[in-house]
Amino acid sequence: MATVKQVPGKKGVWEIRYDSEDPATGKRKQHKRLFKGTKSQADRHAIELQSSINKGEYNDLGDITVREYFNKWIEEYCRPNLAFKTIQSYEGIVNNYILPFMGGVKLANLKPASIHDYYTLMMKEKDADGKGLSGTSVLYHHRIIREALCHAVKLGYIHYNPADRVKPPRKNKPEMQTLSIEQAQDVLETYKDHRAILPILLAIKTGMRQGEICGLCWTDIDLKNGIISVSHALQRQGAELKFKEPKTKKSRRTIPIPDDVVKVLKSVQRQQKENKLALGAGYDPRGFVCAWEDGRPFEPDWVSKEWRRIIADDKKRAKEEERAPYIPDGVRFHDLRHTHATILLSQGVSLKVVQERLGHESITTTGDIYAHVTPAMQQEAVRVLDSVFAKGS
Image (cartoon, rainbow, N blue to C red; front, side):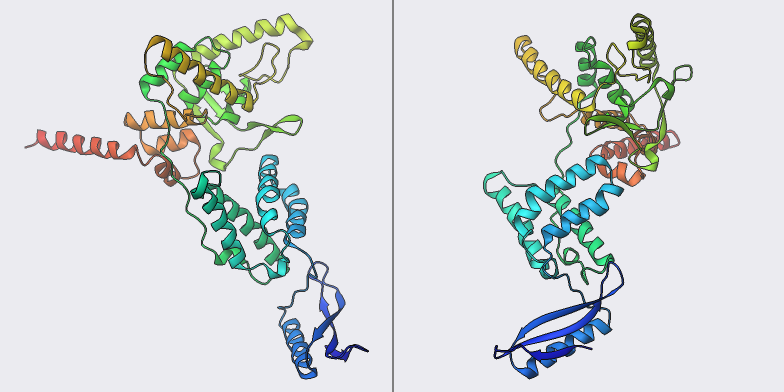
């Protein structure tokens, strides 16, 4: 039961003593709180405190700040449960953006208005001089804040999630950058002797993700039947390159490959066998497909850098040859995966087949990403219907 006692020598200052349950341990803990006002006001405050305790609604985090809580959340929840790159991403956003804005606020006092002001500031900076964050980036911040505070609610640290009461910004939908069939053919021919051509070929011809390509091993490939099995991806985690689980359950998949890819892979395999014989114990025994002369795998970041170098080289060649560049501005290595999908869809391959090749969790995801391609498919469907029914008229 809460008790009220005047602080000796301080008029209008009252000490309220009460017990509550520690949400982390379940044990009872004693508290004392100073209250300024009249005796009747102090009594009412004590009754309100006791009532919230009895209802299980009381929370006393003392002076714990948003900064202290977010750091605790990253250390105690994120590190044991999330992927290395996800933790890196969360830490960067929390430390560089979220905490400088609201880190000094007491967690118990964090209101929806503070979070809304944070989103507004980020978007305003973008509108003002282009140095701020896009709607997509701020939406990602919202998801991090919401996830962290949701965890705080589950542990009983706060009674509700203030991020749930804030409308997040909309995700940007930039126009997708892909290569046309002709551009893809030109790139594969022009750079056929480039050291990064195998990852480029696999991205365009299979739609695999960058990490999946770099993590591909010969044990994942059935050259006789022309099938690649995707079961993991390669990712740098600190000082090490490690295999990681597929992005989703659907990411674990098999992909039939065309004959020209089989032919290239057989040639690469023969060369690697010669390198292995020459180097002996100095050859990496793990059997990576996209590898250096000593068998070590290409790193995903290296592949991205080489792709950017190819873009720069293509621009230079285009100027010298007085032609348009084969690679449009803004095309990332990841967009070669999108190129694979858009080429298939434009040639009438079903959305379901494309979904399975890409490893999307649902066909809805595939349809949403490639909505710009499907209108042409609808027109083709109309053309087929016209052709079929014209025969019977």
